[in-house]
Image 1: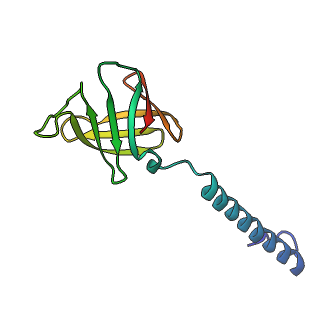
Image 2 (image 1 turned 90 degrees about the vertical axis):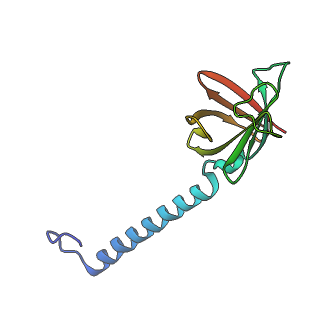
Image 3 (image 1 turned 45 degrees about the vertical axis):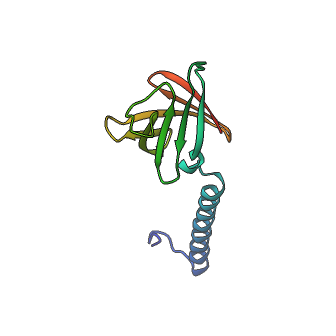
Length: 138
């Protein structure tokens, strides 16, 4: 473990090994503390019901519901992707938040990728297709 080119005394070997163990324990404690107290938010912070406030449209309102089970739905009086009987205006999908992005996949069609610009307790700013959207929690 220690080089043979230097004659290490028993006390020196014990001090080096103890210092290495203490440094390893201190590093582990630091990593644990940072992960526990300062980790980035997970997708659960996004769960809830959100209404688009920007860009504003006086003719329609759009609501996005993100569930903890990773299912979601759009509801809009003006935008209908796959209308069904009794649920006109709803569009069901699954979602996943990873890193700086939210991935949404409708039952049919290609997934959508939304970039997370800012997350606040009652406001969410996203970018999709080179356009910024602001959502308020309702």
